[in-house]
Length: 304
Ligand SMILES: O=C(O)CCC(=O)C(=O)O
Image (cartoon, rainbow, N blue to C red; front, side, top):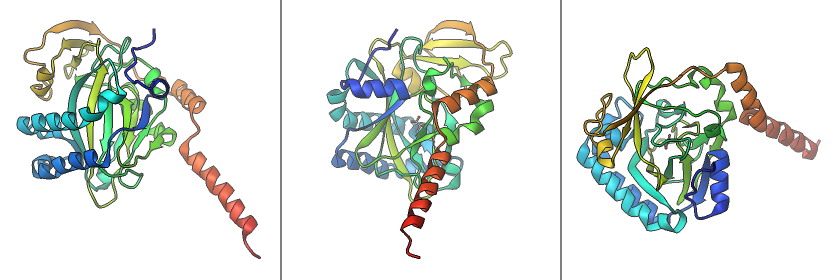
């Protein structure tokens, strides 16, 4: 059954459904500037974690006041535009995502946490950077269509990722998505993605807002560390439950709605490699091909 749409533009919805992400123009330069200004004003509070993490989010600070203020501010700015482009959705949380200028700020292939029953719904982030993004300052990269490959449970604190064994094969097949001021990327949390390290000398600032279709319930999947039976607990969450969720612990107030066994077996390497090669031409081959053709062309036009 098709999952309920949230884009007003059917073409964008179709691209999002097929690829697991889509880029669109959403914000004005003035709105983006306001998002950046708020970050600059709260930079010291955000940067309390940078010794440990070169890629970090507002949530990582564990500063409840900052987390609430950033959430409210990002929502206030983004909501000026969102209803013009999205329907039948509800928002989850908003956050800043900061990439310090460092080789260690790269984000390797991953899927985001699962917030909804993905057999019926999807959840996504609206991601917007405050400056243009490129490979040099840490743009996003996606494995097109990977959200459709397997139905994955992505719990905390234990996260046995079924693609861990094939992670190293993914980057050549990534599609890079650069952005200009005001462009955003809407990404399905189940689509495998990552981002380059930021080597630009300046922090890359992005704001995200998570959305889900209006009829979806928000949930949290909990898998305790060292659970040999791989029994997953599913909790029905409110936004407040997420704000109060403490790292590695069960939600304090949210009711558990289900407990089930899940098979976290790693993907079959040969199958996955077959899927990769069927779906995409590796980017290094595209650029090698381009270099080959451009070398030939420049040789043709070179004066002897
Ligand atoms: O900001 C980035 O570089 C990565 C963003 C990301 O992984 C996400 O929004 O889920």
